[in-house]
Amino acid sequence: MNYDNQKLIDMLAAEYVLGTLKGPARKRFQRLMLSSNRVREATWMWEQHLNDLASSIKSVPPDSHVWETISQRISPQQLTEPSKVLTPKASIWKAWSLIATAASIVLALIVWQPQAPVSQLTQQIALFKDASEQPLWFIDVNEQGLSIKASDKLTARTDKDYELWMILKGQDAPISLGLLPKDGVKSLLKDARFNAQDIALLAVSLEPIGGSPTGSPTEVLYTTELILL
Image 1 (cartoon, rainbow, N blue to C red):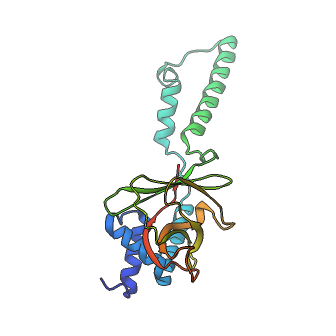
Image 2: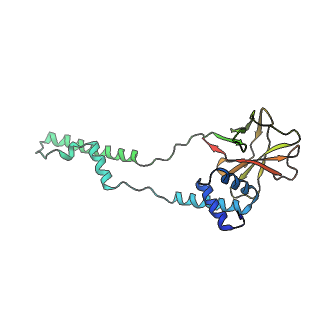
Image 3: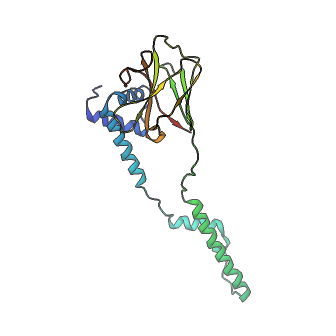
């Protein structure tokens, strides 16, 4: 594929943001995001475009038939009951009944309308897998930092290190988060710029012992996304 074609980049970026780009194609695109500023910019622009589109959609009030349905469910007898001559006492009860019905309709509409999600703490995790879908590293993000567990499936090289990177939306360069464990569990401090909403993807690179000598990934092996639960 000609990844220098801006139209192709835009199409792939749109599919990536929409979630329709899947499997090997999605992984290839994630690798391109690490190496190509044009790909990162296109992805960021599509994310902004779709976010703006979503925020511009306003809530729609219920149609008249919805009102009628709610009224029938709350007090159907009031729609079918024949008119009667009301005594003063009956008029009082009728008035209270109408007030109660109106209050019920308002309450029903409040429940019917979409509600804003309740703010709550979210768990942030990530899982790196190899080409055969075997798990390699599991990352659990907490307030203190990143807890990283190496899988038993990982066959680590002794002459190299594995470095964890994050790439932020709209940014040019990946940011190193530290070296990954070759076995067991390791904790890493969170970079001050680590924010789940700003992270486009995470990556693992193969580096000389001690980490990248240039401040950039030497050889990208795996990429994945941060998952919010």
